[in-house]
Length: 257
Image (cartoon, rainbow, N blue to C red; front, top):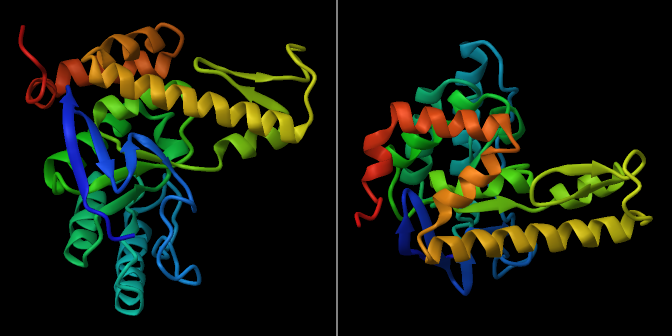
């Protein structure tokens, strides 16, 4: 993939964009991030590290990730996506992202997404600092985002989400909805096999992404995020932190009436 990311409009810090023929925010899958040579890696390898670890280990993870990303770029110039490591240390994450940009990557995956969703302050501060420090033409991709978090993450400046979460939950007999997940062994809403649950989850994710983009086009994404916050303490906490600590970031692209 060598497409240039274009920002079509803002709704607050949220970015309605386009990457090739794909509107963003959207799902990044093997189908829409493929290279000309299918045998090449779509995403540069990285040295994964847990979220809550000692700084020395996180620093080693960043160094190894940058080495692997440099090797991948030399062998596969069309690879445009790499992983931001750094665990819970925001300064390491920001430096990793900036160094990956210098290597020629403009698609940046935020590692440890599932952990970040349980740490609203870290989540907010990380995304805000990344957006302040990386190029506007670089797009952020989040991992393992449940449907209820997609509007919030998009509002803060995330441009895409890795595929796979719908299939993962289908094997756990869990049906995803726009606001929460249901264990079908406990909540007998439907009787579905794993394949049917996976398809249902895919439709739900697609709907939430389309819903998010339409709210962006109508400048009402903040309203949608606040609605989601009623049913999610993490989303409510993240909004409070955004409003209290990052007003300048919010107001930079907020439309005045």
